[in-house]
Amino acid sequence: MTAQQSASIHYFTVLFWDHGLSTAPGGLMLQPQYIDRFSQPDRLSWHGVIDALIAGHQLPRAATTDTVLEHRNNRLLNRSARIEGLGYAVKSVTVFPNNPAREQFLPSVQGICTVFDECTGQARALIDSELLTYWKTAADSVLGARLLGPAEPEHLLIFGAGQVARSLIDAYTTIFPSIATVTLCVRRPQSADWLRQKLASDEKRPPIVLKVSTEPGAVVPLADIVATATTSETPVLQGNWLTAGAHVDLVGAYTVSMREADDHTLQHGALYVDCGDTTVDHIGELVIPLASGAIQPDSILGDLYDLIAQGSRDGGRIRDPQQITVFKNGGGAHLDLMVAHHLMSLVP
Image (cartoon, rainbow, N blue to C red):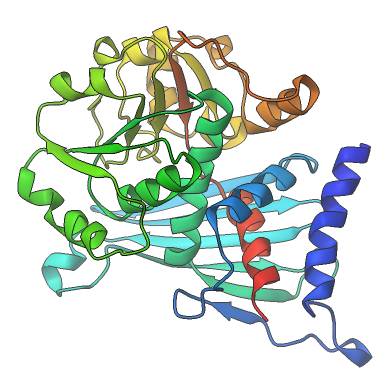
């Protein structure tokens, strides 16, 4: 184990022991914490979550495994991880696309993440997946953009207008206060109404100009950062729309049949992933172009473990200002585990 990994374990250990997350006297386990959006800590911030991801990626690489159980158009996704110094996590999520049509306000995505103690295997926390995914997914993306993208982007474009798009706007505009314009690229203008209302009611959000477009070919060339947050199985983004220096953040695809960017995007951008173990052989964004020969395994230049290690050695960002960069946010339970421990440390 390196000195940097030892320091990261110490970072998390101090957090948890300081907040009473130890075994009770006599060896009895304390009651597992339950954390949801109603008990969300006031001190939770994008900067803190990203710092936790950086510290987590300085630990030994995670062991991960995923399973997907499908029935018609419904899915049960189980993602598991172990990280030395943090323990184990299993996040189980159901995706039932027809729920909103069946009952108003019934979410299409629901789930729970269980965190287990590294030494005893006892459950330490149960965390609502909606809360955890909101913070984890966007922090993953913004960390990638911070390492690869322009230092002071002004225009963020997002394909999609759902909850993931909302979290991306929240995270990106916080970490990059230079962003003045956000464009939502949607198929129908009215599909952006919900997000527009949510943003308008958020008094804490930094002021931005919010635009809606149904013509991606016209608006993508104007963007410094292009994020895709859809459930599409065919590309919504064409690489010939991108301008030099743009950063692409691919978020939505999570099964072997899903992809959001065309071959041109992956062929002409410097391509990175958040974790090679959870993306390369598991998500259509990469599986499909690798199988067709559009890209080769060595087209994937690295992941967050590599980028953070390289950044620590080289003292900062890794970027040619004219280079298009592409980052596949694949998620993964190892990220849930890192963020879960950060949440646990903030709850009294």
